[in-house]
Image 1 (spheres, rainbow, N blue to C red):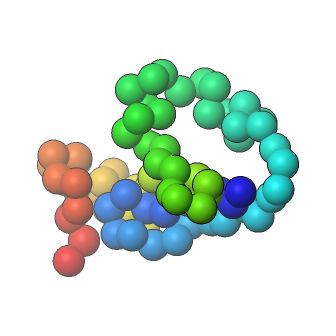
Image 2: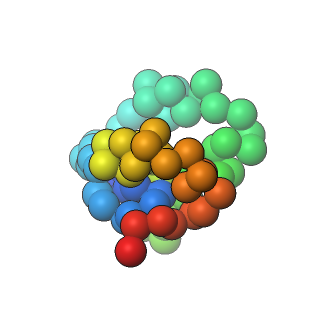
Length: 76
């Protein structure tokens, strides 16, 4: 089971953890609410975990342009 982190706005791969055995609590998933987990974490048919996050470039764009928060994707 791998964990793949991808930016929710631009789709850039932010990180990848290759692991056979670990607990999701080790990754801090237990700190999320049920709604946050539903929004941020998906499982594929191979058992891999896909986590939606925000890359540094998109975070900077959001800080400079707060109105971008209303859009799921703002990078064209």
